[in-house]
Structure formats: C-alpha cells, structure tokens
Amino acid sequence: MQELEQPKRGYTLSVFGGILIGASSIFEVIFVLFIKGISIFQEITLTSQDKVFMSLCLFLGLTAATLAFAGAYLLWKGYRRAGGFADIIGGLLALTNIVVPFLYGYQVFEIFGIGTLIGISLIAIGIELGATLPSVKKFKGPILTSKEVAVVVVLSALYSVIIILFQFPSPTGGYTHIGDTVVFIAALLFGYKVGGLVGIVGSVAADFYVGYSRWFVSILAHGLEGIIPGLAKGKSFMFQVAACVIGGFLMATTYFFINIFIKGYPVALISYARDLFIQAGVSIVIGLILAKILKQALPQVAT
Image (cartoon, rainbow, N blue to C red; front, side):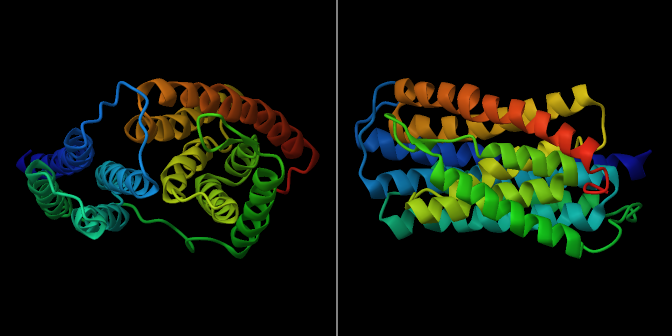
C-alpha cells in the first residue's frame, strides 16, 4: 500500500505545482495593472508592449500549468517517460516566465517569483515520487509517421490559407474566421497528434502573416482545440461532438481569459461570445459534417 501511496502523492504534487505556477502568473499581471491604476472590470487601453508582456506572462504560466497537469495524468496512467518529459518542459517554461518581467522592464511581484519557484519544486518532487514505480506503458512507434507528417503539412497550409483569405476583423481587436473547421477535421480523422500540430502550426503561420503580435497564445489555444477532439478519433459520433465542444470551449476560453487582462472584462466578454459561438461553433458543425462525409467516402484516409 505504501508503494502505491508514494507515486500518488507525486501526481498530486505535480497538479498543485501547476496550479501554483498558473496562479502566480495571474498575480503578476494583476500586480502590474494595479501599479498602473487599471481595473480589469472596465475597458482597458494598453500599449503594444504592455499587451505582449501580459499575454506572454499568462501564456507561459498557463502552458506550464497545463503541461504539469498532463504530466501528472501520464504518470498516473503509467507513461513514466512521457509524463516526466511533460513536467520537465512545464518547469522550464515556468523558469523562463520568471525572467519575462525583467526583460520587459516591469517590477516583479514577490508572490509571482516565490510561487513559481515553489510550484517548480513541487513538480520536481512529483516527478521523483511518480517515477518510483517502473514504467508499465510505452508509446509505440515513431512520434509521427511519414503519413502524419505529410497530413500535418498539407492541412496546416490549408488552415493558414483559409484564415488569411476568409478572416473578418473584429471591432474588439483580432479577427474571426471559420478555419478551425480544418483543425476539427484533422483531429477527428487522424487523431490528437495531427490535430494538435495542425492547430498550432496553421494558426501560428497565419498569425505571423497577418502580423498578430500575440501569436504565442495560439499555441495553447489551438493546440488544445486540436488535441482534445483528436482523443475522440474512432469513437461514437456523440463522443466526438462532446470532444469538439470541449476543444472549442478551451480555445475560446483561453483567449477570453487573456483578453480580460489586456482588454478588460466587458470587451473580453464580447470577444468570448464571438470566438465561442461563431468561430468555434460554426467550425465544429462544419467540421463534424465534413469529417463524417470524408470518413464514409474515403475510409482509407484516416487509417
């Protein structure tokens, strides 16, 4: 029993470490806004540098937290190497985040630095405790097959082109599109690895092309949007619908949460409705229909 309790405590520590890192990044951003005399409950006007700093600090903290959660889950399922790798990358991102305020010339909130370091320490202890049992599962085969690499390249390019050609500027900033349809199709037909990579590569490429300075947010938002539905590959239609809804919800919520601190809650809420019901909602409906048609017409495509 004691042998099982020790790894269990390790998973718990990793989760708490992730929560602490994510919360610390939020406190840092709130602290900077407080110094500027700005409240998130009103429309916010910030310089481009302020917006990039706020977004980057939150992105690194939230991504590190997400990787810590994923690492704890993978360790719990027996994927020791994959879980440890996810936790290590998350810890490195958290360490990087400590330097970000200095790079942009902002004051560091003590809670941010201390909380992040404690969070990293908890993740490190969690990795050690969680790795005490032998690895019972391993991922088989290469990370990506040659077919998956080709699919990622083609669909990422298609995703970027659709975003660039059929985007609609939003009065609250950014732009709206239904290119996420491609992400859902990629995920449902080819799985979470292809779905996640198409979401990341395609969106970041489009952001670079249109000059969107907070492109890094797309890595987390559209990565999750592709990974979650990809876990439903081969499952029942209703399971796929639920996975797509969760993926779209996480994408829209990621942007919403960051927009609260760079646009203010009222404007962020308007953007959230746009991202959730138009960009994600319409893309999910079209993606599910096209994925089902392609699966029936070309069953060999997704094998």
